[in-house]
Image (tube, rainbow, N blue to C red):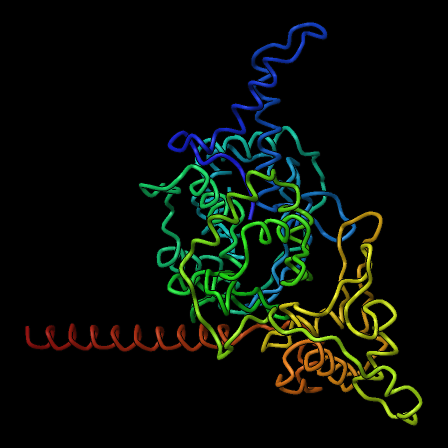
Length: 473
């Protein structure tokens, strides 16, 4: 999710630009007057930087420990690993030779300057809604406000047939309408602003909407939650049980800003990354607008739960009982006591004054799918905060699959749903393993093979018919 102006058709969309221009013109004259052209460019760069933040470009296009926007970040997908590209204004390795029209085409249609297709790991099906004004501001920012990095990113090499980039042309015909955001009638400026930010720049649906067999967003279940491989992007529709229909707008804004909504959820994994790099840096007005829009989307039910995942929560009382009575036996309770209780407290209620958070009334703990809880145990929780970047240590090396399964089961059944199914070692192992291409690769190969067979049959029939005509003549 992210930010900035939805175009002249929506006055709310240009408020930021107008404010920036107004602030510049109202500033006291502290020196020689700035030429109008330079002032306009500076304003565009500043505005484009905000838009790029709203679009969370830096998260995908910056490798761990690398320079901003220089690419080289591996992105797991159902068809294999896709390496993000260098989008600095480098003429050697980046997009420094792109014209604005070529930049806009890459952003909206997923087509590079050389005519090759991008893969939809680049969310151009959402970015296609970005207004012309905002594309211009983004182009100005990337060309004038970003430092060039002359370092080529690794080349993406996907399995056949996805290594044929031209195959994306057919996919785009089916699933990319290449249309700008259109404002529905009768909606408030705040709602329209939230819709534009959510649907276009922040591209929230890219993660939170389930995919169909061809890996396109299933719009009939928009924001109904989707697998991201190892992590799960939760249901953020207005459904009161399976989604966030029971959240107040203030609670949702707090979560988008900090990643912590007491009594509801804690951010980790990709969502924490989106909050740190993008959402937390947006204005309060834009976060309010996003929250208003998200709370208005159609409800999408999913699963058999009868109450929200965050509704579960009861302090543990077994610490005294397990001390001295387990005789060296490893259980979920002893694993929690030895690895977690020092921070989250034996009761699971967390520490006061900004310490480790409570495990009670947390969606990942009470949810039917244990994936996000297991991933938090394996990978830990890291944030971009300079003071406390590691919020929770990773236990992937300290605990084996059986131990992680026991610990996750204890946490779920003690602080979440007491009837939650037991987490298995096989489930943990599946989350430990490197992401593998999904079944879509097999489906694509079968489909391509079938298409070739049909084509050969048609050609054979055509030639045989032509031969009969010649013999008749």
